[in-house]
Image (cartoon, rainbow, N blue to C red; front, side, top):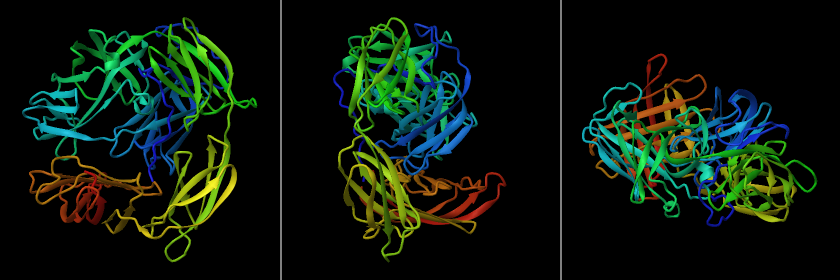
Length: 592
């Protein structure tokens, strides 16, 4: 079951408020600057960071690749990742998340040496918005009022810089700067590096992300000297204050910084600007900042670790970040603004807050005490399959206080510790899945509050796991089933609906996070042949791609029905350059 995270309902104060957090082991950090041009120098520090990755519905994403500087890891069954004592930039501590089917997610924070930080990142689906022939160029509508116009003969292969002449598929999304939940999914944070090389605060008037792919899934970019024209509709609530000309900023997903490059002009109630390469592009006005620091404790004097703090302003809206493991937070807020600081639980309930400003100089907010009505809960239980045997490869989906959790099942048992936002009793919905038997059970509901609660014996039987992908490469078998955050399907080109039919972009990630497979298929002319790229990764494996896959589509159901088929061909080891035979079959739910 998918469930959207509960979030705090906000008023009309919804324009992007700047608030950048640093996490500190003490409250004595010295920040003498009073605006964005007088801030501490950037240095490399040793710090720790953990976080959680969610999909667009607030469901934990398992198996996402996470990196920070040279450190890499993957998210666990609850979408959680951890980096301990790694090297990070003090000004732009950066976490990058890659998951097939989504735009790259990221978060930038200010941090200090020895800090233990927390971030939450919600991924944005990578949706195709159409395509155009590279030779003629074309205009893509991202959504009403927001477009990207591409020049003729202006596209190259991003890896080789060779001129590209095929069809261009465009993936794009628009980020509304007035959305109250923008902080959950926007890349980095609203800080930029201007053309003067100095860090500044940004007020967004609209963001666009644009990526291009070729017929075979290769990444494309604009050719040197070529420009694309982007158009952003200015949100109605910002039209009265939108300037006639505004700087453009692109996002660097290798450094976590917004970089100023060019400008856009206002045409009616839209901004129009030209760009020479693609990334996220942002229309932003600069703003001065002051520093703040605060220590959050509960009513018993305990530090409130990894708790969300938000600042509100009638002019700037709402934005925030998280305390560190010791309840400290520090960073930047807009200069001269009257603000309200609030502490909010992950479940969305308000714990307390204070008034701040108008902030004309650095703000030491001291210790802020809030009342916490929370509890710690540990759920345990057992799971059996259709033969009443203990399940040894599966999971239990758990819906608690509006948040989705997942507990791994091994040797027939599971255990899930949870820090709840509330102390009152509540209903807990549990659904068991047996991956080996490709079966799921009916939802079971219990009541729990705190302490250790035994959910009893759950059955993972009665509801077939209807999606799968299996293949054999060089004698090695791979098998994947349809855990909702590790098996996806989406349309990537115009081949869907052609005769014979074909699907694009089937992905799967094994539950032990040790291997994954990606298939990208393309119907070149509506009748075949199909070009495919396949990647299989596991420990010590370097299998790469193939462009000679034969497909046999055995059924093509309606939307929300199922597509089934088999495939065969060869796949290459990217290190040895040897090829191996490949065979497989797939059943996947049609989503478009």
